[in-house]
Length: 138
Image (cartoon, rainbow, N blue to C red; front, side):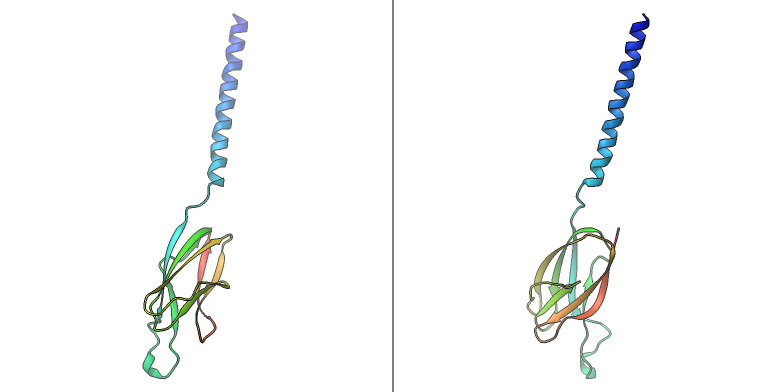
C-alpha cells in the first residue's frame, strides 16, 4: 500500500510540473507574437492657419488619423489634397510622389523603438519641410 501512495504522489507531482511548463510556454509565445499591423490615414493639405492671399508662403502639413502610435508595423495611406505633386517624408524615408488633388501613396514602416519621428512634406520644387512629428510609444 505504501508503494502505491508513493507512486500516486510522484504521478501527481509529474502532472503538476508538466502543466506548469505548458503555462510558461504559452506566456512566452504571447511575447513573441508579431504585433498587428496598424493602418493610419494621412492627409496632406494646406494648414488652416495659413492664408493663400496674405503674400506669405502657404504652409502645407500632414494630418494623421492616429497619434501617438505603438512600436511595430504601420501602413500609412497618404492622400494629397494640394494643387501640386507632394511626397511624405517620415524620418528620412520618402513616399513616392503623389499627384495633385487626391493623389495617393502607401508606405509600410516598422517602428522598432519608441521615440519622436520627424515628418515633412516635400514637393517637386521644394525640399521637404519639417511640418511636424509623430510620437511612437511602447
